[in-house]
Length: 287
Ligand code: GUN
Image (cartoon, rainbow, N blue to C red; front, side):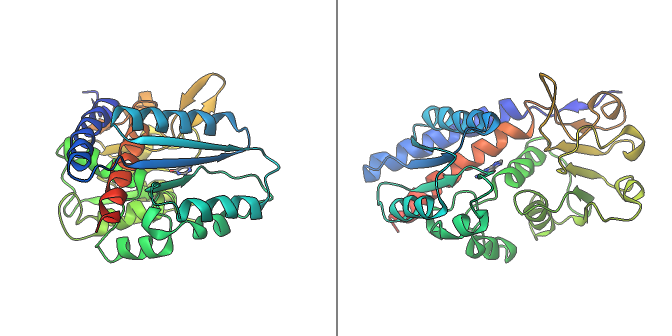
């Protein structure tokens, strides 16, 4: 039997409606409209699309969104100046510096400069530390989006073996951290696989839940998937005009019990979590 299709688009739309209700209630009591500021440096077309999608989603949730578009030649110092200005602006609640940055700018320097209380990407060491300790301030956007999909589709995680493919700071590491925590939609036994993992396929074959975030088109093939496993595909790869995930979708969906499509799976959930974090930042700003 083919797998259940996990509909991230519809789930994200429901989440956005919840956030819109909460943002409206917050505005009624405080008079504050939560504001997300996105910073986009250079002219990477994919990044421009992602940022536009984030801005549209803000509008749907009744959040204010502002874009700072800077040329590729922007220096690290100029970008740091902008981040400092946004850090100090009380009308700005969330700051998102879209990645990747041009090569001459050190990403870590810029990301570390974003004040922790406005770090809606959950990249700041203080926020990562809180997450690791199981008392998160913000949620890592893509991993929390994946977790919400597991919750919505009532997928048992307690005691399950979750295999995360990829060890990035944005997805792999925080994904593993969420799933290993005590509590709901967690309590999993987690393995992280990466480019140096020995006999990766045999480990993935043991997984009840697979989260693919390695950035290689169609990397997860049907022979790597245990029958009945749940597959979350974080990859966004271009094949000509087509977007494909890190999972070989058609054959894997014949083996898995549930699977996310690309597009329309994890991607919209990342954005919905970003909106939630922006509202959280605004709520925290009033104590
Ligand atoms: N580029 C690709 N994904 C992301 C993300 O989640 N946050 C930021 N800031 N940039 C990205």
